[in-house]
Image (cartoon, rainbow, N blue to C red; front, side, top):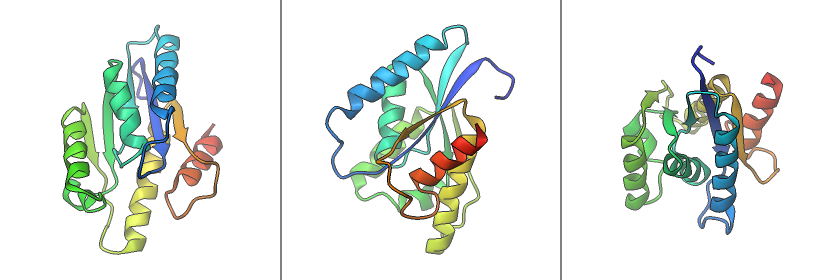
Length: 160
């Protein structure tokens, strides 16, 4: 990616009310295998905007396995936090963000629904541009809006 020997794993995926059973273990297994395969490199960094659901699950498991996390955020922190459903969710976001090696607040405009969607799309594009591998936690359905998981997967496939 940027000339270093880090393996950069991007994450995209869905939000959910309740974490699907078995998913955490499967994510841990995939991350562990990727980390083992990249043992000739100097380390692993997961790129996650820390949205509720898949983004946080992968970031949490990556940290537990000793990987670093970088966080490209679609909006300013304060504006982004408005999208989280509960005070506990905001606290979890802040906890994980505090463990990040790098935080990038993209210049998204969250003043309109269209602007928010475009900001999420830009975050997905930034992740695809910076990662070597994209880990997608996806139900296989089309995107429900701009910047959705399916759109990020298509971008990654198009980028090779």
